[in-house]
Image 1 (spheres, rainbow, N blue to C red):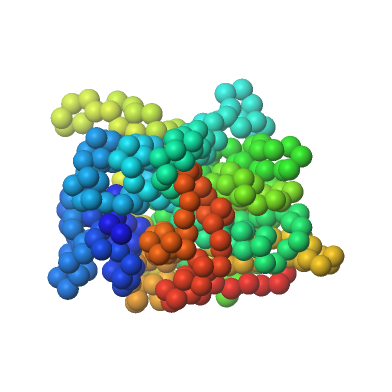
Image 2 (tube, helix red, strand yellow):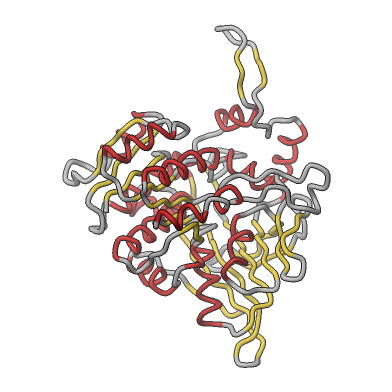
Length: 406
């Protein structure tokens, strides 16, 4: 297998460090808009592994991406950029006739009149509209294959196949006790993406109603996370699992709730009130004259890069899927989860916990595709694939998952 990895930020760099320990691929081209960042990711692996090369590419330039795929004789494009670049990379892969894997789906747009009741354009709609073209091409677009979405969806499939006869609700629950020394506000993941998913109307699925929306931060609940993280208040957040799971797993209700904390929520609400969450450019004065900038990009620029916070961070992050239903005629509740300790991920890979936890899952998926354990054509989510091979291989990678009866 020959891979084009687009995006050499925190997650992309962690992908190279994880993949370098595995023999399943022949070559990986690491590409980024910032060529220095791609070169640094490759250089950090040392000269012993010649399977990696660095290149520059603009992820929004479909022609340039197609050219790079052809030049590298690549079989698959792995997208490690932020969601703004999903569609040009997705389309470039289709046009080039290669497989495609991403960790986040095409962007949503709220309903123009009733944003907190009805869905407008949903996450992934633009990709699923192209499903037939991918099927006809005989190529696989595996979308939402990070940790959440991604591993959380694999857990949902595993629960349906192995643990339940009937599922009442699947709820993704994400929480952490991570702290960053010296910072009052230092998000552990891309603030651009965090603003997008937290301030958009959350989507909920109910079998009798379909997909619908609520107000941001709705339905707060306290969820007790394992391995010492403890109780964390979680709220509804827009997330891909709610749009993916019901397509392949029968459940009466599907939700996603994120443990944000009151302080984080208040800061997000303030950004929204000030218009600093907007992606629409505004004109500001500069030494070089009037310049158009996106307020959200300014917020991202003034905050520390999450990938650089690992040495200052301590604690654990937990991604998991809570499932309620019945097995053999008896009620059952379980929480399937994956915890990463920042001290472990930093000492073992030099990547902070949230970044590493996101990065390991697409590498596992690539290996399953390379060996033929996962296959298919069209636009598919992780829950369209058998769960057991993935969970077995994740454990082989040295990061075990677990299950807690509730």
